[in-house]
Image (tube, rainbow, N blue to C red):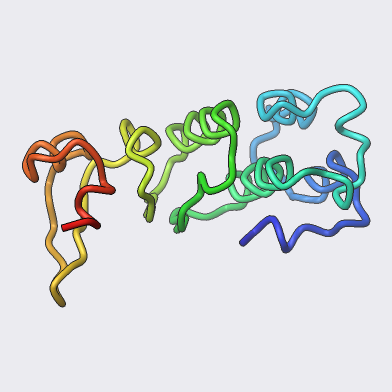
Length: 148
């Protein structure tokens, strides 16, 4: 949980400002605004942020780090719809490999280009997006797979 690793003594702005940015065109205030941090929000201490705000801040940090693989386990848990959409849009722009574990079909739609199915002591690779996978399984949701 990356949100738990945030330095609670820093402000939102300081948290992002301490990351060495390789792209000189990135403006921290614009980036924070894209993740719904504006005005006085940027001067709040991390310790007073809600869980969703901490998750958004942690996602900004992850996306700014010079990595080419992100592994996210249930990244939409406990997030409101607007935050889910913001994170999904940011991940669509991620220029690397994204490994997602999620039961959130709407979140996976447009992000997942391949599905790995774990079950019966096997791993099956499906070369299709989440809609194609569910159509192949003749199911409307990922919850139905768990119930079988």
